[in-house]
Length: 456
Image (cartoon, rainbow, N blue to C red):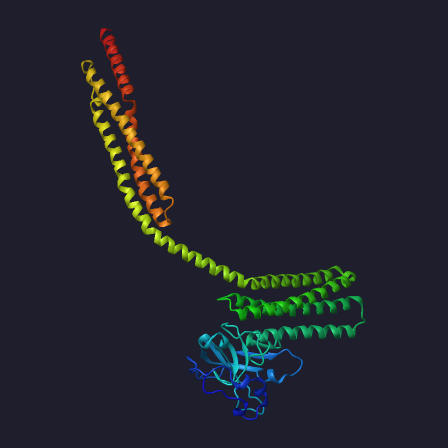
């Protein structure tokens, strides 16, 4: 923060500031000046403010009164825009009010959004622990280390306009109903309409308050699950849970009374009650998430540590398994090479059987057949032995770490493919004797037929 700590005495006789500043007038220990603070000079003044700060309290509290007003954008600080109040404080025109964000460079205890007399100054009046991109709507403490003042609301100008417009429309509608009630003779229908309007207004207020608390809870669940943010979210949701329960009791009582109303009015009241029940369910679910947030965070950390430990162990074992795979491969490749060689010998032994033989060559052919059958049996034995050997190595590789297991699967799959190809090449030679006898018989029949035709 800039400069030395300053109390209210250094700011004149403004008693309102004294009530709001931190003990001793110090927000936090003095640090280096705020980085990235800009003071852009606009060529033309903005037509509308950026932020509206207002109070929902019926009484005018001096602590909140200092902060209430319109704020315009002034520049940026610690990655967020900061704002300056445009209205002067009566009797303290020399005091400025800024709304700005401070990150965790001075520690988590000093991070969040602040109201102060300057950006990063020692004189502060209110704080919000949330690290949102824009100033939070609710959750502001007054004084900065005191309790949360729900009456203080910070809202964007456009959003505030919409809220004011809706409230004005509701007041106008209520006023019109009152005028109609005065002008006409009162009857049962007018009374039900009034009560339905009050129920709608109560449901709308419950919706706004619940959404505010849900937004705070959502922010608390993001990032590193800051304990202060989680505690603030739980507090807001608990308050809303109680408020919604009270609203539910109101609708339950009205539901009994509306038994005498017409069906359309009863249906409208039922629809409003369902909205409130849905809100209450959302609040309860979000409250459960927040309460389990700490446990969830611990579990995530445990899982992350376990995953890191597993990866470290796999990296350590990967080298050992890769070395084992390298030692397996030569023997496996030798088995496949032997099987392929044996199949090739079968083809060489069966080569004489491919020529058209005469009867005088039958002994030679039978000898070739006998040698071929011996080679077929040897080749089949080599293929089977290779398959059993590779299957055993694949089973052994199942205990490898994933990366080494994938490499082993690729290598052994390629060797199995070679054995399958050798088996397909060998299969036709398994019936070499039957094939020779069939060819000889067919040749004999053809010769007999030719003789008969020649005689004819």
